[in-house]
Image (cartoon, rainbow, N blue to C red):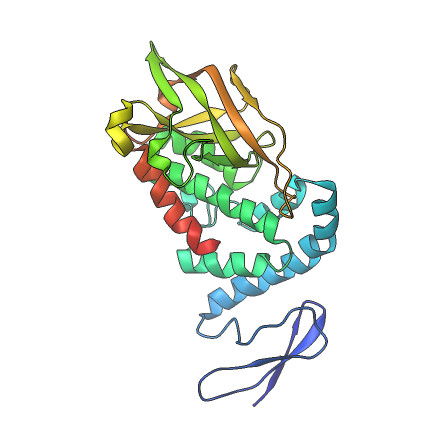
Length: 281
């Protein structure tokens, strides 16, 4: 039997078919050829409904303004975090929601109907939090993840460099030990959220250049560290609700205690983060 659902601004009629449940647009700006909730559990359907409603009420009405005025909508994202979307697949003991990767994909697909640019940043933020959750020491998890899960603080992922894009293992940003600190020098490029976020997960070379990916470590850098600065905001065609800039390190001293995972494990951490992030994108 056909069912009628309310989705965004119009009514969607859902009809049954032996192979697919087709959705016919009635008077809506949202249309798709299949029922997006088909095959989901009731819990996943509820997650999807919640994300659609948030996208409709909190994101879509402002999407055009955010893009035109290049607004990074922190307060809206904090509202999303209040629903558990600041740490979707982070463990619950530090404030995360502890959901699965499939649950996460369902949520991001629905959020993107409100603002794809902002949703993409929320995905990056979640990826950074997961990297700390999965590879960080217990004290790092407890120090950083509660405020990231509430989006009191925001995170950026720093891998790409002006001369190391697709060949990320060739990165040149250097971290040299000096007592209890790493001293960072180098530049990261096209970093989402740069300048507006609080925590930077930086992939940098702690070994020799000929060590390749095995010479790369992951270091957490706070925004207020001396020696950390940012380039000009990149001009983009769309996706302007998240600023994109270079992240520049000039003798930036960071405690060795801020290393996430083991020395030389950074490239593995970076790739594992991207493997999950790509599903959401």
